[in-house]
Image (cartoon, rainbow, N blue to C red; front, side, top):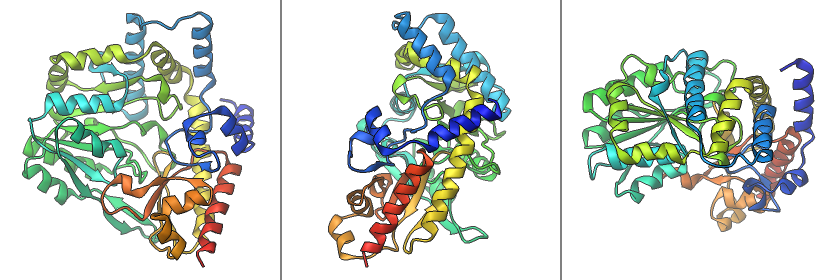
Length: 405
């Protein structure tokens, strides 16, 4: 993307308003029509022109049926090529399978590829469905709370509790959910953490489900995503990676994700009937969008990442001035983790949680209680909005805190 095109694009994002977003009618903006939508993981920034073009052409041609073999093969090839190009992970096209979404992959892995009755280990705070899906398929969920600390500048940090994960594996855990980058704290996991997880997985024979749906959204220029599966200690028989362009290109409604598994893990996945049928549930529009995004949309994505990083800095600066709040700025993803435990006041207690109190002030965020036990005083804040809208959101939050007295 040329510099002038990128400038025009960012100017269009800066010009967004709540009224424009509500008129577009996405869930993020219409569920709470009086509030700024900063909750569900949708972007307000649209999608890449390459994706828009292929979708418009499909509609014009009435190409709305089932996915032909050559397009299914094309998306597998593009995913494999991107993993090598972006992350240095050599993936063979046959090791990529299609699925409608990441959660259907997880559900299939739990039901078909873990021991009956074994609990699912989920580090928290965690993406909400990771906590509920185990129960849906007859498994317990073992929550392992993150270790919270401070970096050299005093900013909050979140790390995997490796001792807690090991204890969960030793007690019979059947699968570990590894979210990298980590929703909702926005962390890109370190090589040492990935290697430690791989060692534990091999020692206890516990499969790892690596959710890397936010890997394309590493916004911090100083951070680098490394796929868990490409670490030397990751056992291919125990490693399953899920990914998609849905978050980076804002097309979750098109339903096309990918599972990457190699060696014995690939053989186990392919041997299962329900696993194979998942590939038929990826939609034709989703497949076409993924191919277009990976072939012709990466320049647009580079502009998106830079914009999101600038917005994160703006929001962090604004909220640093608000007593009682502490923001974890994401390195990977556009989802920030807001600690409201320093707030006090009768109105806050009457509302029942910071998220509900701030919703009353006109900013809709996710309630921290949904991300695991012990996070009731947190909110997840979606930063994927125009900077003018972001400034309105932080102003409303600041005023709401001031009103607590």
